[in-house]
Image 1 (cartoon, rainbow, N blue to C red):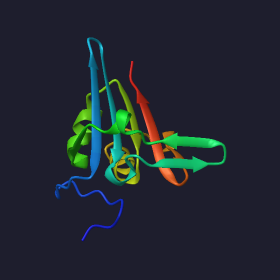
Image 2: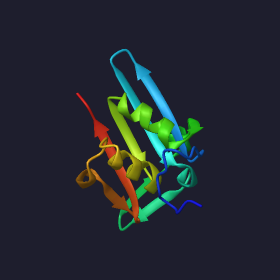
Image 3: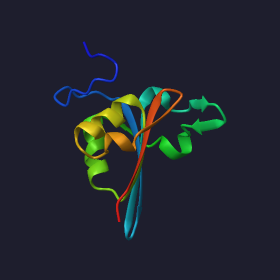
Image 4: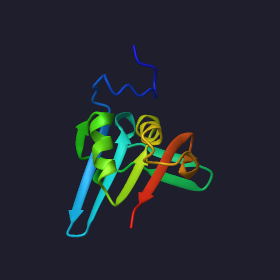
Amino acid sequence: MRDKGEFHPSIPCVSVYVNIWRWPRCVMVSVCDEELLGKVLREGDLVFEVNEKFYKGSRMTVEEALVHLRNCNIANLVGEKIVEAAIKEKIVHPEAVIRIAGVPHAQIVRM
């Protein structure tokens, strides 16, 4: 049985939503852990909405989402599963992660 937040690349699971936008010179990807979709994270004056219009694309495994993250120019990630996996795969630096109401969030911009 998997612990919450553990990444097991050999065990496929539907656990994240991935939305992809493509333009001629840019690909943007947003990924959120499945259970966060539609939630609002609040910490002090900060309000972060895991908006369905922005994050709800295809449901897929964390491993499949990582493929898209490796090939995009801009990314927005929220949730323990996807952020932890992106750190393990060296897509996101651990110091680039912030926490909002205890939930990890990271952004990627590649020029």
